Image (cartoon, rainbow, N blue to C red):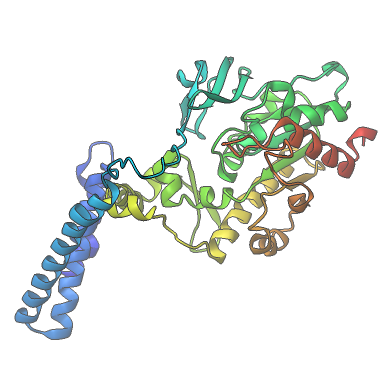
Length: 404
C-alpha cells in the first residue's frame, strides 16, 4: 500500500495516461488524497499489525471529515450569510456601508492579455481609459498607453539625445496605476535625466519573477536600441507573497505567473507556472478557496512569512540582476524600496546583503497618505506627487541629472 501510494503519483499517471501529459487540478487533488490515504493506511498496518486498528482509524477519520464538512456547510455558511438586523423605529440609523470600488472605461475590455512568458501583460499598442469609482465617487480617471512591446509609454523630450537607458521593473507602482502616462515614476525620472531613455516594464500584480522571466527571454536587445544604462527594480512588501505564490495570490490572479523555486542543489530554476509547476499545492489552494471556512477566516497559506520566503524573493531578484549584468556588462542594477512599502525590509535585507544587491531604501522618507496628496482615497496607490518625489531622490542618488 505504501509503495502503491508513492508510485501512483500525479506526475507518473499523467505521463502514462494523459495524451498531453497534463491533468486537471481536480484530478491532481483527488490522486494526491488517494495517495495520502494509501500511504497512511500502510503505515498504520506496519505499526499496529492489525486490520482492526486500521478499520478503527478509518472509521474515526471518516467521521472527523464528515464533522468538518458539516461545520463548514452549516456553521460557517451561516456566519458568512447572516441576515441583516430588522429595522427598528427607535434605533439610530446605521452608518451606510461604503460601496466596493469598481472600474469603468475601456480598461475593462480585454486590457489584460494572457502571455506564456509572464502569465499576463497589458494589451500592446493600446490606449485605454481607466475610471475607478466607489459608488458614484470617482477615485481616479486616467489614460494608459502601451507600445508594441506592451510597455507603458513614457513621454520624454528629445529622445534622440538619450544615449543610455534606464529600465524600470516592478508592479502597479512602477506601471503607474491611477496616474497618466506623464505622471509615472519612469516619466518623472526621464524629466530629470536628459541623457537616459526611460522604459517602463512594470504592470499590475507583477512580482520579481516577471522581471527575471523577461530578462531570461533574451528579447530586450531587440526592444531597446541603447547598449548600456541602469536597471531599477521597484520593490514593495507584497512582492514576497507574489514570489512564493501564496494562496491569496494564486486564487486572486497569479495562477499562471512564473514559478521559480530552489532545487536540491540550491540553484534557482523555473518550473513552468504556479498552476503547472506545483499541481498538488495549486489544487489544494483552489479547493480550500471554495470552503465557507476560508471565506470567513480570510484564510491565506502561508499564514506567516518565514526566512525561506524572504530568501527566495531576494534570490529571484539577484538572478535578474545577474542576467541584466550579463546582457549589459558594466551597467549597474538597483533595488528601490518604495516609500511606506518596506515593512518587510528588516526581514529581507539580510538576504539582499547576502546576494550583494544594491539597495536604495526610501521606505521612511515619505508616507503614502491621502491627506498629504501622496495616495488615492479608497485605493492606496501612490499619486503623481509621490512618484515625482521618488524620482527626485533617485535622480540625485544616481547622479542622473548630471548625466553620469
